[in-house]
Length: 164
Image 1 (spheres, rainbow, N blue to C red):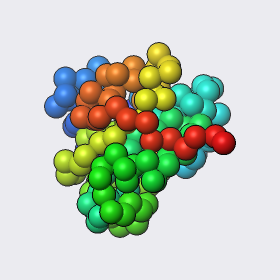
Image 2 (spheres, rainbow, N blue to C red; image 1 turned 90 degrees about the horizontal axis):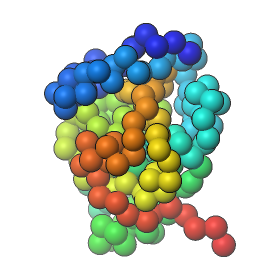
Image 3 (cartoon, helix red, strand yellow; image 1 turned 180 degrees about the vertical axis):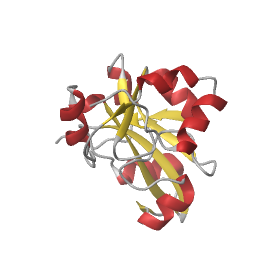
């Protein structure tokens, strides 16, 4: 893992636009892609739940971003209820790229091509710092969860699957 940025150019521009240019020096680049939260946590050396997954769903066909801790799964029914939608499904890869400008595995929590509604699961607040993708499957950045959620324009919700 290196500190050489390697962030996606759109994400690097978003950091500057948000007044977070100093965060570029904290971006970590991996020699190999970390396509799962578990791989990212192992590469960083943090808890799985400290990974902030950025997942795109389609609510009645409209893209919505859900920010979830890496140790949990999204409860699609809870997302549906939260949004008052008739149907919620995982977005197809082409929809993810079209909506965010990034490929699955590298979607950051903000800096997207289009403005999307954002739901942030409350579980992210269990940590002082979380790690999120910096626009590629090879890069991540650390941020305090409340700050990350604020920059993403997220609404705090409880949408993770509950263990029976």
